[in-house]
Image: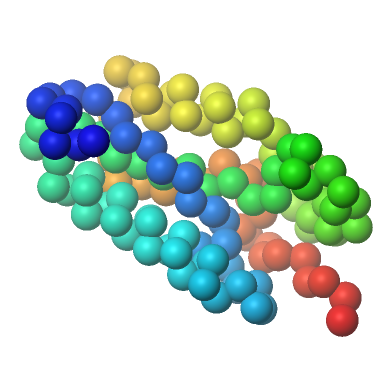
Length: 127
């Protein structure tokens, strides 16, 4: 995709707050998300001279139909979150709109769109 972009533009990937916190038994997922964050930095450096911005969005557990049945985990996530709520699809979309706008002068970054969730870490599942 990037070779076709001659100049200007924005590429946004999806990362996760889990790239920077530890959750046991999730090493492969967390490692791939951390890898995405580094690829974002490399691509931003490589394609910045062409005016192409490359960034990533890192949500935490988000209020979606996919997480609807995870009530216990959702409740623990809300309680641990500094903002005391889950992120929404609209939160993620608003970040993507800003990152893709011509007013955005950000590249090579992972935008933590998770209400500060990464500050406290993940809720641990009871064993």
